[in-house]
Length: 220
Image (cartoon, helix red, strand yellow):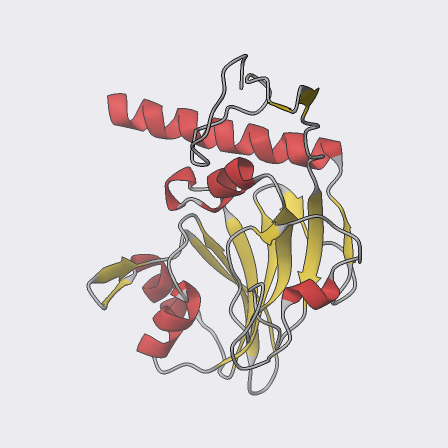
């Protein structure tokens, strides 16, 4: 690497900066892949499952190199999931400290009202964690159930379900419809498509803007 012989397989490598050769031949870089998946309900966000359950990899096109989901959606949840082999970018998207908005549409087995929405915004204490939502609003309701929109800017395990369980409210469906400026749109369940360059650039700008806001808040 960079003209020197390296025998340690854990030697750090800076992609795009370090020159790597094997037997005098340059090692070709792996093409970066960015996919949008509409995760169906009932599949696992994992490469494999010890119980033999179907995973999101069953939804992906054949012939892909190694790729991994960006963050997680639990088995009962559905909607927008990013897939990539760019692990550094994936870590920034998924990191709680990035505070990138994630938008969900949630069907409840009750009629939501402003009192409930205010409770969601105020947050709860659960398992030594403070759980809250950034935004909550009513989308529509029927006679016995309703749909609400929830926006999170942090990514704690089963955050929405845990908050609603605290109020003894059953979740009928939970669909992630957006990550930052990227919307799920009309992609069919189980379908994938490439993430457009303009969409990736918009995500990158949103992360930079959030970082600037946090830095400004810390200084003030």
